[in-house]
Length: 152
Image (cartoon, rainbow, N blue to C red; front, top):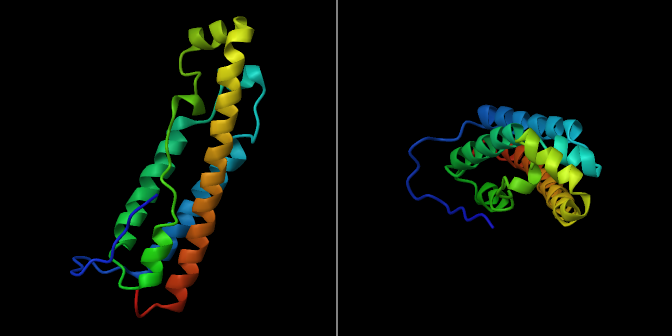
């Protein structure tokens, strides 16, 4: 869970137009990632490709920068909604195939790689759920900022 608290002293005010633009960009990044990475991968596809970890890192870093900036908001509802933003983790199981030789060995050792593949699919499913949540919370934040422009 994410912990975000109201700041008593705000060093940099939140600009609603910029915040909405960044949240829309985050939603676009998430949509692109979900479109580029299939919901379920075959055994061979999992070991050869996996999910794109670099894109995931870019989304995670951008999300964290948005949360950091919006934590300066004076609107309690924005702060509460920020706590719903999941913390994205990048596990080895997301993209186990960074080394080609490891991928080929795991494909060849089919029975040994099955438990890892099954857990990897579970991890990918959880990641997709977290990314869906990021997109939904971003939409809710955009609505809150639009409705409370004088408070944000």
